[in-house]
Length: 496
Image (tube, rainbow, N blue to C red; front, top):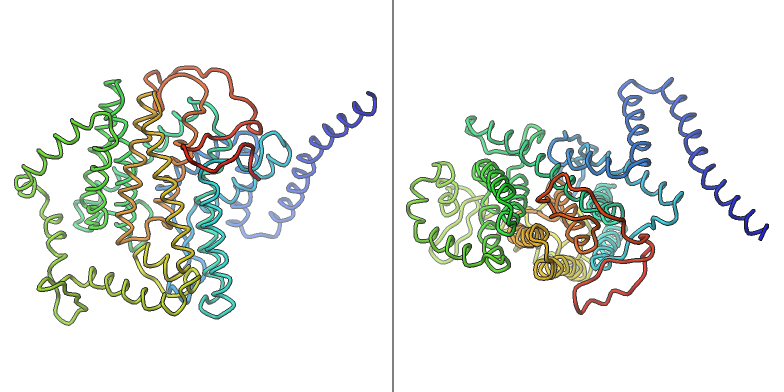
């Protein structure tokens, strides 16, 4: 008994000494660095140290920082990707996620009960997708199609999106936490929308805040498409009038800048998104009736639509002289649409030369089309891994939408699934599933939707009682897993 007690004491002492040793080492390195480093580097190091400690003590605070930085953070460029012919762009949230991930790993090393990666129905397709991208890029570097380290930076950025997902599923256990995360995400969307509305009088296409000299309206359109799907799902399912009105008001706020992004890929994704809401919502009669009315009154809506939006849609079928033009029968497309169609053709030709694992990430050159890019960069294996992942996400969302009983939870699942289907359409003309400002909120909500059946505490996802106190905690994370949809091969026990 005494030996067991001594071993326990030594284990406790070890867990206490590890963070102290890390803190002491960090203090020494920081103090020496502050003396010799430039002021901006010193401030960055001090901020990283503060965030590390903050997240180590309470991981949820790190998630709030990431959510706020998703659309409200500046970008900076590092190096140049030869194959991409553009610089590798990093944002503040990239830095935040790196620090938060390291802090999270340190916390799990100290507290073994937390577990490293909770087993969920999405783990296998995520790991397969990351592995294929890494292998294809390594082979591309060895064979000379991937130049420099740009490809590996891009793969690292892909991985950081999934870090958001795993931090959520490993650290969120109460419904009150979910309410807070969702509210912060929607407040961020509202602020970004207000900035977008302020850009409309300039006559330029609306883009997200802090996009640099050349904005990315297509990215902002995809983000707003996903957020509006979530809000509409909540508005359709919640029985609470205040939640419904707030959700509809935020949807209206997002709709203005969404229209003035002039992003045709986003417009295209809006249609199947509404169709998915009609199929999955318990108020499908209301949605179908509204859609039928909208189609019937479409000439009136078209007459009332802003002139830039109408011109942008019509521009699709207006070829320009001395510009690449693709024709389908007698119909000719504008240079932008023609360039995408030409890139599809080039991707298919390139894929035929390296069909298995492709050229590696950034190994074939830039193209603004998710499916063509995935095929040519990672081959048929990479495309299969990507499709496995997104199908698993849609399948999980449908299962949650049909099985959850709390209206707000069901609404969030309905909106998430509809938003995913909208993004899958958006990806025809954009790199939707590798864009940081779309994928970070996407994987944040994916983690929340996965967790919904297991959450402790009462009230809805947004909560009809926003101040409701949470109930008891679920069992230790090492002793339970997320229930997969019927037919899944997932087995019991924690992963990693």
